[in-house]
Each structure stands twice: as structure tokens, then as C-alpha cells.
Amino acid sequence: MAAHRTATVEWIGDLLEGFGTVRPVEGGALPEVEVTWRQRTDASNAGATPEEFLAAAHASCFSMALSAGFTGQGFEPEQLNVSATVTFENGIGITGSELSVTGTVDGASDEKWREIAGRAKETCPVSKALAGIPITLVLPDIPDVVEVEAEAAATDGDAADSTEG
Image (tube, rainbow, N blue to C red):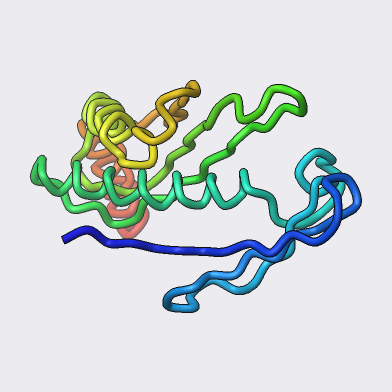
């Protein structure tokens, strides 16, 4: 069964001086939000923009796909922190989305992170909807599991040494 979500916008005035009010129709989970052209094109002008909504959709969708990817590979993700930055260039439009990810997944090596995150980027439904723009993925360097275990053993050994006396 398909899930449908709807929002409406009432726009008052012309493009440059007018404003719109975004209103979610179903569920009421999102508050009413005002949007303006100035907010969209002037980075120093605070306020919501269509790109911010798109970034929220991309980050949340990707985090779900990433969590499912880890779980499907036998890992248990403890915490995933995903941000998406959607770029808008006046006169051009939306020119890209950058996903940045950190998190804690016990036992997942750097290689496994990159494999699963890359697949999640390609299969996330919002990524597919954004197929007309470049989507980049930024991942931290994840220490290899062996390195983490070696560091833990060294720390445990130091703690044992300091208790002797």
C-alpha cells in the first residue's frame, strides 16, 4: 500500500516581496512555516527554505536506508548521525546534495561502512528522486576493528599496571 503525504502552500504577493506559508495537511507533525525568496537566496537571512525541507527529507531517508543496510549485513547500528546539505544557486537551481555521516556500529570496519553507506546512497528513495543532481557522501575514517581491539587491550593493560603497586 502506498503512503501519501501532502503539504500546501499559500503564497501572498510577488516573488521578491511576497511570502508563502507551508502547511502540512495530514498528521500535523510539521509546524506551519513561512518561506520567502529572500530566505532562499540570502544565506545571511534566517528562515526555512525548500532546500532545507529537501535536506531534512534526504537525511532522514538516507539514515533509514543506512540503518537497514547495516542490519541486513548482521550489524546492529547503535547511533547514526546524518546531515544533508542541499545547495541552491540563484539562476541555476538546486545543484547538489551532500550527505555527511558519523555513527557507532560495533564491528563495522571502514571498508564495510563505505560499502553499506554507498549502497544506501544509491537506493534511498529520496536519492533516487534527486537523480538529476550530484549526490556526494562524506564519511569519517573508521578505525579498523583490529585497531580498536588493540587500543582497548592496551588501555586495559595500562589500567592493570596502575592498580599494582
